[in-house]
Image (cartoon, rainbow, N blue to C red; front, side, top):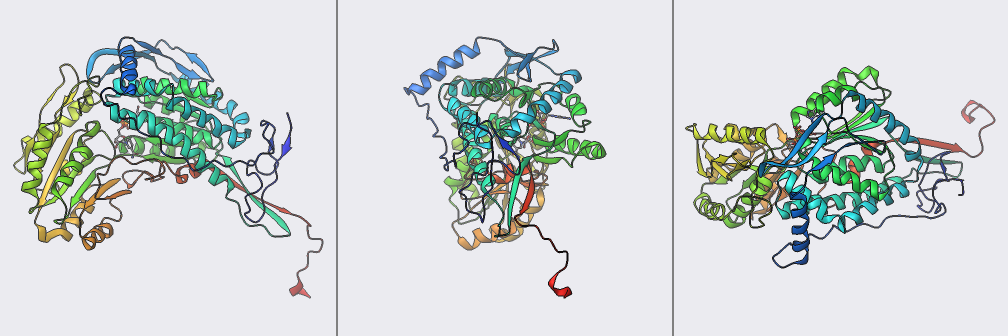
Length: 571
Ligand code: NAD
């Protein structure tokens, strides 16, 4: 194996590999004289799973297989499986009596062990050329695109209660897109270098953060669970991964695929278990270097406060990246088309049972459009089927667990008992077998009614009908109604009205849509995230997220050092 010390490029010409910085030895690549750059990838094509398609048949086989077994999920620390004997169960949201997996939970001892393993693995991992790290991500993408597509989709469908389309765009396509696009974004970051002159060479070395990263992932997107870990690893960091217990089936399979793709032991350490107990150990460790979080606003606030409380302990100021809740809106101008609006509302509010941070959950509709729009909504919702994920005609499945079910029905009941609201469709739920809640539309006369303001995270849409003449005033209300700033949409065929909405709603959404539903952001196309109470807006699916996981070092090398302390002005 050769050992070389990589030179840096001069004057922003990209011809010298930006692999390492000053003094870093790159001895782990046989391709050490290669100048490599990833091509801009294309988004993974979405399979249709239409009747008779080969992908539908093979997925059904995998669904039947996973539906008929109980998997044991260990912790994976330093590449080794650990069974603590303290266990919990993963059940199907559509049939909560059906156990899919038994999982082991981390205790303080295993968390401390995982920190040691992450720190140990870091030395070799950060010294590996970024290209070699990226090649592991690219291989993972290929494995998921091919032989493990069914595994990922079926486990996400059964464990997280997604229909086939929702699983395909998440557990297959978005996971793959993150892996491929991030590799490309990383290559753009590493090649970005400062200007040099003839007398000195300047370079920026993109060091990983000092310490380890804590990745805390939500239940609702397998792709997010994947990205929160692999993005930080790509940039040379090592991670402790605390998955959501309701997403463990797909998350465990993902972990095994990363290992098969060549992710070295200890780079990502998989530690399911109780969030607060795990956090207490991690956030008291001096090597805690950063938090990559997606979940609720309240959990992120709790973690941020704990970090602040422990600030003096840490070697560096930890980087805190958190994408949290939302209260997505659809705002209609009187020039918009009622049928287009109805489809956007139904898809935006009810796909994956409204359990997307981006879900549309409040709408502002001009009086002139409401009668026709309401007819379309009633007609479409009466056509929606609800039930198990294995029956592909179901558009709606179950919400994730009993706590979510009770919380969502609590909001629906508030509407039932209020004089300012009425339910125009849906309104009931049944948790006897699975956690099923009917897609529900509430009409309110109060733009500040509780279901217009709070994140419900369920299949509930609230509509406020406004006087057409009060378009601008209602835009102001929309902007000020909710603490969140994640997603929103304006529907309008009038350019002046559209631009007025863009201006007034400047800070109301980090992902803003014109004539489209506010969900379905694609990696590389619509970088995702919002500000206000929705998070730090570090835009997953773009280079902006990856730059948070490096701590750049600037190195200036003077070619001929000065030999006289005096300056000409002193003559
Ligand atoms: P959650 O906050 O309940 O849980 C998120 C993760 O945090 C889980 O792994 C959970 O176990 C863990 N957790 C809870 N308390 C913890 C603690 N004290 N220490 C460490 N970990 C802890 O959220 P959820 O129910 O999994 O997901 C739904 C929420 O996520 C919604 O609010 C949704 O809007 C948000 N979300 C946001 C985005 C985004 O990009 N903005 C994307 C997906 C989901």
